[in-house]
Image 1: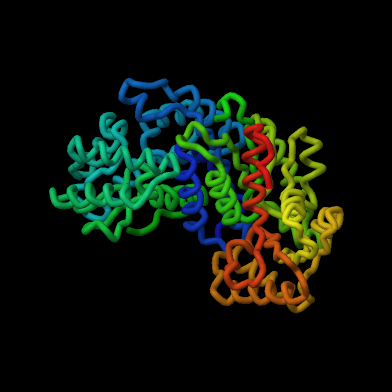
Image 2: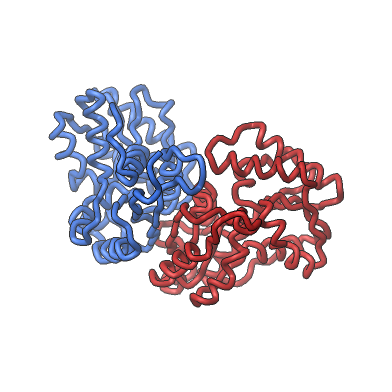
Length: 239
Length: 239
């Protein structure tokens, strides 16, 4: 058992979107081997859903979310957080430099995912992500560093992905959105992807892995697992 | 649509336990009629699971959680929160005075539940709660003010309830714990309770309302609904 005093406080920059933050917080609790409240990781969640759309900003069509993100990270730092988790893939276009500026240790959803794929011997991975994440090539460098080739949907397919993400964010995701995501995932698998990465925290909420012929990787789950390890100063898990 | 600028920031004093806080946060998101991230209520969650056990303290057998609770409320205030929600019934033995001290508007899980029962014309309500909540008579005054008689399990029944709550907190709740809670709920209904109140945020996670012959009231859901209304300065919902 890790002595309680050693647990580092985790700051979660959330609200992007709120349902994805709820999902991540649930995974954080699930990934903690605790037998009482008191053994859980202390966490502060800054859930400001008013952060301007990250994907639109990356496409040059919307307000810069940086001031909002900087404020949230600053508040988490002031509250005593030492470790930062951001359960929004697209926001990783902005947060690494802001975390460094604030002196917080960012556990990057991109890096933990690339490392997990590499540990599994994956050579090609399909990405279901926002158009902002793809255009900013957030996953490309980390994947290529591990010798993994990223695949993404074609343009009409990417429109389907974005429509599904918007449906989840609006609370009106239906069966058709899950099926559209599964169709894109199958297409990526058919092109040779050994894994499909649900590289948007909303995709995870609508995609049924049972409808995809290759394993679907959930970066939010991997992030939660690594955050618990880092917060408790535990040894890295064996692959 | 409520103008975004008018939304008041909600502070959630959580972590007691963590799974119940995840559940409450999910209900807060569900209870918001939002069609994009940006229309959701801004929220900060202080999730310190290291707060000493509230029930044990109320029974005179554990450390006073007040300093931990005061710190969390203070941090929420400093972060700019104006409205306070505490998804832990037992903690309501401590938080009203601390919220007042910090200048935060507490939306009390006890008061919203008593008001909802009264609006439904309930005259007798059974309580599935921690022994601390029952001994401190947290629900009694609010219910009696509305002319509602509270019922609680007998002593062996209350032991069953506490065992189920402990199982949820330790992440090892099974079918037998849900059935034990349902048996106590049925016994309260048999004694004349028109509603069973799942007056501990862990009870909600293990009790299946379909196994109870009277409606099961979820205070966490009622709290989430009222918090959204207060944060958005909306008119009270019609009963």
